[in-house]
Length: 116
Length: 117
Image (cartoon, rainbow over all chains, first blue to last red; front, side, top):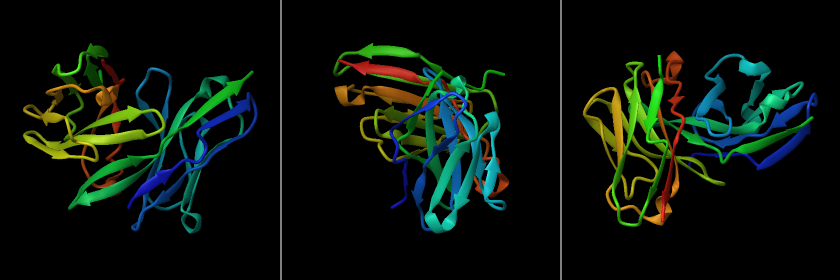
């Protein structure tokens, strides 16, 4: 069955420190992978996506993610975290349902706390 | 351009009551989705629609009904609310299926928090 695992429920970093959020997926076909961010009381906003090509993808707000097929991973990184990055982060995989109908399967999320 | 708008934002129900959540999008998107978000469980797909007049079940459809009478609106109904349906509900929409085009990126609403007592 398709699934997404985010092993870290809660991460705390100091402002200016580097960040890596882990994501592992299980999907038999070529995965389409996404990272979304949810600020408190808000909906989800797309940070970046991987469909094909270069395995290192750049997103908004200085985030990047690297697709590693051999490890079934799509980890999110940022070299220097800002206090405004405090939020919940969701990794998701696009799954074909039938024909050309698809849906997103989400991980359980990682809550990021940033200390000044 | 409002994007995806959900109403109401908050609602408290008693067990057995019914209610409808409305999702409206002004982007002419074909696909619309209803998710529920629960602590430690991420987002789970309740129902989705691939176009006006069509609906389909997602991962957790029991206890919910949906309708897509107009392309821009996707309604989620609870006929007899239960405490297990206490959750935050998110609506999302996307332009078309097919990941290759890169167009199927979901736009989310701000959420509707429902409490069932």
